[in-house]
Image 1 (cartoon, rainbow, N blue to C red):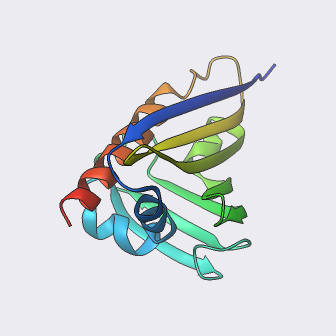
Image 2: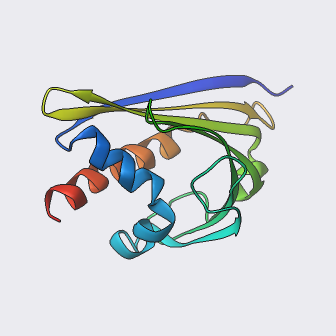
Image 3: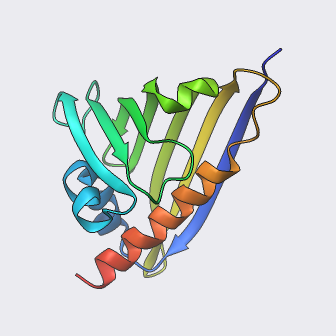
Length: 152
């Protein structure tokens, strides 16, 4: 029997919330150039890659320990709230999870921002470990985005 779960990540970054959000929204263009070891390519298959209904094919680089390819669909975007929700609809991760849905939000905090990322998932089997390795990859990516902005 498979089980459902949820993982939450919360990290404070030094970057302004609007700047951080703009990089998240433009990740299809920026991530492969700025973080080629982690993101080999992000191809926009449908839509503009940053609005509701957009479908993106993400090919991860050598820095991704578990998953090499995913296809995700953007379900919700609220620019005024700096939030985005997406669902994985195809790719390696579905070998392990029947359902994998993520939420990202960026809120101002002092001179910087608070970035929250949460995932809801349903494992294909009890043998599948919790997606801690994916959580660590997300944290690493957010810190790299912060460095990218601060050093731009």
